[in-house]
Amino acid sequence: MSLTPAIDVRVWGARGTFPMVGAEALEFGGHTSCVEVRAGAGVMIFDAGSGIIPLGKSLLEEGVTHIDLFFSHVHYDHIIGLPYFLPAFWNKAKLRIWAGHMQDGSTPEQLVDGIFRPPYFPITKDYMRADVEYHKFAPGDVLRPSADVALVTGSLNHPNGAVGYRVERQGAVFSYLTDFEHDGGHGDDEVRRLARNADLALLDTTYTPEEYPRYVKFGHSTWDHVGKMCAEAGVHRWGMYHHMHMRDDIDQRAIEEAARKAYPNSFAVRQGQHFHLYPRPGHDGK
Image 1 (tube, rainbow, N blue to C red):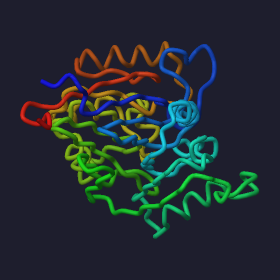
Image 2 (image 1 turned 180 degrees about the vertical axis):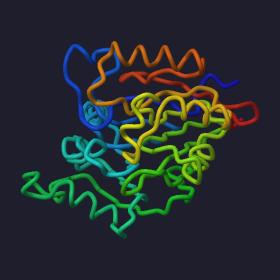
Image 3 (image 1 turned 45 degrees about the vertical axis):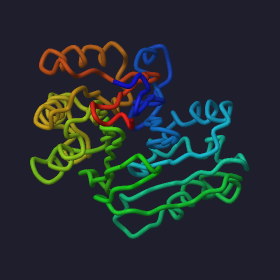
């Protein structure tokens, strides 16, 4: 097997709703949703929560010039970091922004325009100096951000819509599935389809099974429902993602321990975690 990863995944933010600051969030981190994926020469970013701010600084220091940013959707916790994403203001960078969750016909450019709109933010998107392209797609489309990467998309069950992503390269599979609520129907089918046989999947487990009855229709799931779907989909390893914004490290660790008793291939995602997914036999490109 090749020693070179087919897909590299780095977590820059794993929390939902709002960033959490303080000593009680040191283990799992306080930044909201942002995951960096490198597959071949490409740099892909999934969501622009507050975690994209330190990621942007890192990319700028590295001199990365080509970036693809994929929105799962544009609720505040998934876009709050975009106006502070340094590569967007660098004239040598090329930034492609993708979105496909919109249920009202909006375009990705209109979404970004709304993020920068005064009086809620002092400057408009026209201040970005990067070469910015906007790409709209429909859930279910297979995108090709680079020649050897397939990015499978699907619709998730979430208020105002959301998109799940499945990255495929050299037989390796990473699934990014946040902000969905289990529904026992089409929504669950989409989660299983996008997670099928994944080497690694990060999935929304905002609530515990005990909490969930108070939050029905809020658009988020539990570790128990997610664990069942991952078992049915044959997921190799899966991470509990989109932690409740007011959940401290002690409580999150207790949830992880309870989940692992039922699903030993699970874990609670920690900000800063780095995963290497290797080519599967017969897919190493040789």
